[in-house]
Length: 257
Figure (cartoon, one colour):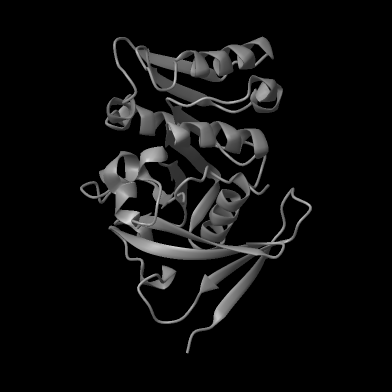
């Protein structure tokens, strides 16, 4: 007999948002997650009268039970990994990396975007809130990174929730330069291939330039000369990226927004 646990999520949006977590026996249970493993999870999110199911991977570091709280990383995949086959999400980036890096120093949530859809910031915010309240998360250390469509999703998330993330790393994405004033205080390390023919490097450059023009000093961009769209393999293989993320914390916030 299945039952549902319902959590009310207060957000910046006018519509009430309800998160429904399937709480009976089954393969998609958060309770089945074990340290050192990445497990498939399912979260039901209701906004107004519309209910959506969000499938995602949850990775817990192998030392999860030995530490009071952990950094949380949200990873957003690209357009090619959309659909209903969750294994596609493990093709690139952190969800691929943790397959061999059991001591990866973040709890990682890697949702899957449905076919022909784009990342929904409100749904992703609900996912973060759910994981942050149901696991040992340090709210001063919540991070976001994503590639291509996920890079766009990363820029959109910080524009919508500028006080939620300690630092972000958007890869070969882009955003809306008019939002620059909102995100001047966020440490941002963007990455892009200089020969990208899918998403021009100018998309990342224009965001960093707009932030600097607005008075921001915490945004930087690394461009890989001669690299086409796949700038993520090099980025996510770089240990310095993770060390840079972890070097940042929210200073005067509990991380809720």
